[in-house]
Image (tube, rainbow, N blue to C red; front, top):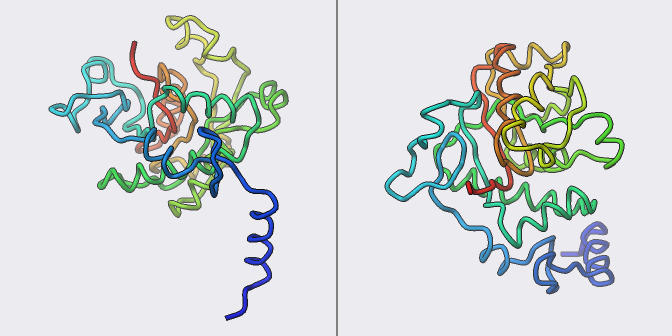
Length: 242
């Protein structure tokens, strides 16, 4: 069977411009080679609501923190822990503009969905929106770059402007932990023309990293105030508690 022109061009491009693994530097197809993927992306028990690590005996149970003070979101799926060397990949995407990493992040999340077994897929996916200032500085929204391939692989519609930033906020990483809730409060609104897509629906929120969870809590609370039935977070990396 003759080779199609598209496949021939792909083969030639790969031969002339081979890609290398972002972790070990070895030649590979895609952003991360299979051995590094297998070594650094591992599955472990987590709290089903906030995705913090849990002991084997507590698998499937909400952690004490969530039971004591339930966040507005209903569930969180994390692809990996925010630890070396994967934390460097997040920084390379967010601040280094290495957009080729975003589809791999999405693939890790897709695999986590498959491995979860009983996860109910949302009706729509929405990336955490950036403020105008940060979007202008960066030139892209890393959450949106992840959400596009994730939505395609899961077969879930993507609504990039389901929510918007009502105001610019300081980066959460630069705010004291006890001030992060205040910093992000009332930062989001549901776009007026998107209200019908929120009411009674299960919303999936996509982000690169979850640390304190304040941003995702505030966004979920915004969706719930506008009638969302359920909110599930899809985050590439979860920062372990200190």
